Image (tube, rainbow, N blue to C red; front, side, top):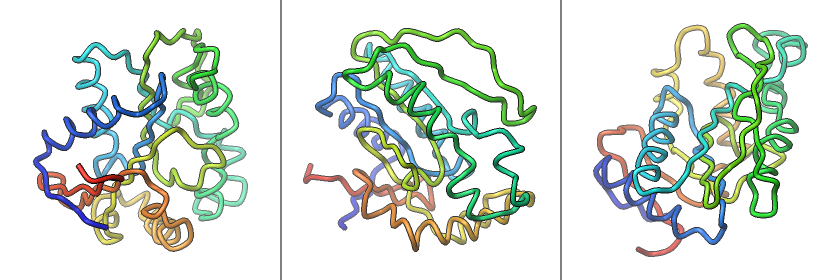
Length: 210
């Protein structure tokens, strides 16, 4: 895999260009990484740039799509198997977001399901996507999903970086991340890989020569 150094601004611009060249009329793009290592920031920046170009954008974070605490914590608060395969309500995400925003979908979607802090369902009206809408989702462990979007951008960061960035209460996620890299091999299945240990000096590996 060949990485090309870029500036942070150039990275966002190039990613937005790449998204606009995807063949789908409503491309669904997943940024695979942690909030603390820059996934949410990058997804927000992409949304802003695409919006400035006149593309409608739906911005979703999977922390609003966790299953109820009674389900995701069924085997304890630090169960790695559940974190990797049972915290995210992928069925609801598929039903309410990914399927509706596919090219052949209804276009009627929800952007949030459950408040991760209060553990309460959010009563929100559904929205209707405009023509040409781009879906940008940020999520850790995205390669474990049993449903995927149209393209996935993986933020490649070292285990030590994750350990340094995560708060004390989520240090147990570090071992889950180690397992994720070993077992799911997200680098191999991603469409774009970004070396992101240092967000101020990223490097990117594109799916085709640019």
